Each structure stands twice: as C-alpha cells, then as structure tokens.
Length: 358
Ligand SMILES: Nc1ncnc2c1ncn2[C@@H]1O[C@H](COP(=O)(O)OP(=O)(O)OP(=O)(O)O)[C@@H](O)[C@H]1O
Image (tube, rainbow, N blue to C red; front, side):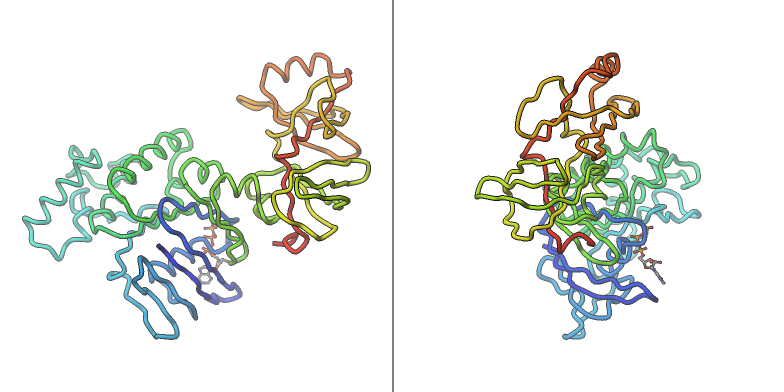
C-alpha cells in the first residue's frame, strides 16, 4: 500500500496531494503543470516535501513530524524517466548492471543475463543506446529499474518519447513485461485518458497541484466527481442544470426546455448541478423511445477513422454524438428527416455545485 499526504511549495506552485493506493497499476492523469512529475519526485525522494508523510508497504519513507526522510537509494523505488535517461557511454548490459554495481562481478553477470533474457535484449547486450529503437531503449530502462527489485515502479510518461504508430504495440508489450516480472505497485504519469484507460486499473486525477479523484478507471470516466475530471476524460457534453425533483431511484433535472430523468447514484441536495454525458453514450434514431428522447437538428458532422461525430442542436443546446460509419451514412442521406436524440438515464452523470471549479 502506498500512502501519500504531503505539501511542497515550488516557487508559485503548491503541490498539496493526498491519496492511498493498494496494489496494481495507477494512472496519474492531469493537465500540463498539474504536479504529476512532482508527485513522483516526492515519492522517489528526489525532492523533499515541506510537510506530510509518505509510506510504502508500512515503511515510512518520509514523515515531517518524525523528521524521517529515507534517501532515494534506500526507498526500493524504480523510477523510469520520460526520455529513459540511459547512459550513452555504457552499453545495454552495463546500463542494466548500473543499479547493482555494488554486487560481485559474477553475481552481477548472472542477474544481467537473466534480465537481458526476460526483456528479449540478449542480442543487444553490447549495443549502445544510440543504436537502439525507442522501444528497445524503453526495455533497457525498465530492465535497469527492475534489476534493483523495487517495491514500486514510477513511470513518468513512458510513451512520450515514442512514435505514435508504435506506441500502441509497446504499451501492450510494457504491460506484459510488467505483469510477468513485477508484482508491486506501478504509478505511471500520462496526459492521455485512452492510454490511462488501456493500462491502468485505477486513475488518479490531479489538477493545479491537488488530488481531485482516485477511483476505478470506469468510475472516473462515467462518474466524474468534478468538472476537471469530466473534461480531462474527454466529455464534450456538459450542461448547467437545475435539480427539480428526486426520489431514491432517480432525479429530474432541467436546463431550459430540456428535462431529463437521471439515475440516482449519489445523493445531491443542491438545486444547481452540472450534468454530463459522453458522446458515445448518446444515440440518434427516427423514433422517440423514452421520456429522455427529444427531437434534434443535425447542424454539423466530423468524420473520424472508425466512428463519426454528429453535432446536433437539441432544445437550444449543442451536443456531440458518436455514431458508427454505417449509421452516419444513413443519417446524412436523410438529414432533413426528424431525428430524436436519446439520453440514457443511467449514463448521465451529475456533479455537485461545490465541485464546479475543481
Ligand atoms: N524545480 C522546479 N522549480 C520551479 N518550479 C518547478 C520545478 N519543478 C516543477 N515546477 C513547477 O511545478 C508545477 C508542476 O510541475 P510538474 O512537472 O509536476 O507538472 P506535470 O503535471 O508533470 O506537467 P507536464 O505534464 O507538463 O510534465 C509547474 O508549474 C512547474 O513549472
């Protein structure tokens, strides 16, 4: 278990984070400058928080009250930097051996050979980093980290140095390597919700130095607790609404003439809320199907590689709706026909007034 609660002022920026994570892969998602790298640096001991505590598997790494600050090299932490930070003058085997240079030569050799094997790098032992592809460099960096037997892996934007066309393949490769060779906690920083969703078990949202939400990845996307999370997870359809009725099963919300029923997941009492729904959860057809179906006008469209987006106007509001290619073609052929926009009540999420700004 990783338990972090600390503050660090860096010039004008205040990092003020607090979260606990049990096990598995945690994706740290946040806008540029939100404190993602600083968070990893505090955990690794590369910077010292002003106050608070950090513990890993019941070992205190930092505690300002008790004046404990374990040095980085004793924290049992594996840190993989954004650009891998391999030593250019050392070959692959020497790079991997770096973290275990205190061991005897024959012991080192056994461990390095074993790691070269696991990472499918045996044929590259004598190569220098400049002679390797981005994916191979990543494996060397990971091998150099794993050989020290860390209890936690900290990966700072592991894919940012790679070409986009191989990113996807390498994500799966990295995931497999980690799952087969490492049983501790993994924290990885990303800007990209798709990447976080593919790799992580849970997602931590950071904004302006603060922890906003930590939950299962589906929960973060479909039940964001703040506007920041809704936007970071790619939700385009966000409305200010009034809560006009509620019971234990559902809410009724309105925005102008648009009145929608929403499944009651939380227990809101505030009359002003934000409602959101992801574009892929909206649908369009020529029939009214539920109380949450309203006529709409197609005002624009955007073609994508696999799905298309319709921009529709409904009761004075603009919504983005994702549709499959074949439906898009049918709808565009009969654009003038009356269409209904459907809002599934269990897919609409609500955010309370106190979290509008965060
Ligand atoms: N050594 C430093 N000295 C001064 N300010 C710093 C330092 N390191 C980080 N900062 C500031 O702290 C804030 C958070 O930085 P951090 O690198 O953690 O953000 P990030 O979320 O990782 O951003 P990005 O996604 O762009 O890498 C930024 O405003 C940054 O300018």
